[in-house]
Length: 603
Image 1: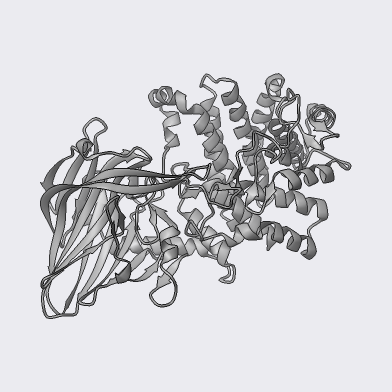
Image 2: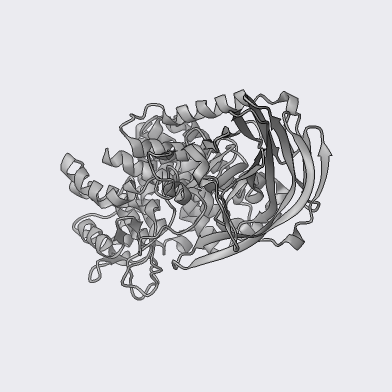
């Protein structure tokens, strides 16, 4: 994880890095590496995908001098405390500042048992004169890219024991509660206008958003001369008993979790350690979360009333869940976390069954069955480590037979067909391991292979049709699954021809295009999440040797070297052919998990 020390390395990288961490359920922080919130999805306290607290500013008054300690860009000016930043450690979430008379360190940590954010300040006053130390919260209430002006910031607030409760939305009953034992809350309402947010879109255009922020008041304490003080500020979305909070436990749990994420990874594997840290910020034990900042609680699927309300989001939910189930290998299995993998797979299957009650359009139905088929691929990954067939056999059989019932509508899509062939082979091997067989699957397997070779494969263009109805076949990323799944479904000289086309038309050093560069449909966007499949197909074709791994590493070298460049310890979800990382939510589960899987292939 990124570290800065004054006089050793440049602080410029800290401004480029996207720094995120979470409470592993509903709340998270997403800012730059020096705590600047310059992107429209940035914030110090984000709950359920909504920014509540944009940033904290520290104000230090000593003698006749005033220091404003914040990183803030506005249309009229930039406020920077860069010259006072002494050190940053994003693994420990610590930030050190030195203004001469005052030296202080702040550390941030989420409580794993709630959505509470703890900010601890260790302040030293090295002069005789007392100093006044103030913390000024910058409050908003918005979805990403939905900026607000001062006329919309009509927040109510009331002083409570040890702090303040700010009512952000009466309609949604959303509050922001901030408390401190060591500081006094002072009401001092004002607005901060024209704060800038930059955004690089998929066409590489740079957009600037501006918003206003509410400065409802400030926390204040006095630091006597030649003394030091430790103070804490707590942020949550509902009222809490401050007397029950032990900040040392919050930071102990955070350090323990970080250590668990890095356990067993040799210190020489710097990139893998960074990826392991980043992916540990997405916890799937209670909720299933595809990205930071958090957007979705999939437990709503089991609530009949909420299920009806969320019908409009069905396709996005299914796509997100598919990403989650595909990430199980890189998220858990690669690190030997089989218990967590099993728990996630069981929950995914329960969700798959629950979604069966939804009415679905054609695209939704296809994604529903893709979710089931990717579940089977992840099941096979864990079965290769733990041979507990009885835990998954019925669910695998259930999905396969449901797909067969719908095959007239589904077997025109190369991803479905490749995954279904793969699923049948997995199911057959599961049965074989327990001394059983399902004769009907033999005919289905041969029919799928014939369909792929004789109807999807286009010899003269050396591509697979994405859809059987395509009149002019175009290379698309989905055809890579005929090569890269547990059981590839093409034989003979087709694999080497297809791989050559993928290399020439889809491959870039940062990932794969989704559509051929020769097509007018090509958007110029590149997705690192496909690189593991591409390398797997190459290694399968050339055999896994030291020489073939070295060749494969060269294919992915630039991507692996990019770890930590833009996202602290992670990889951007989308790049552009021009080499620019497109702005998107800070951590993407599937992208990071697949790069971890890629890393393991190459080491």
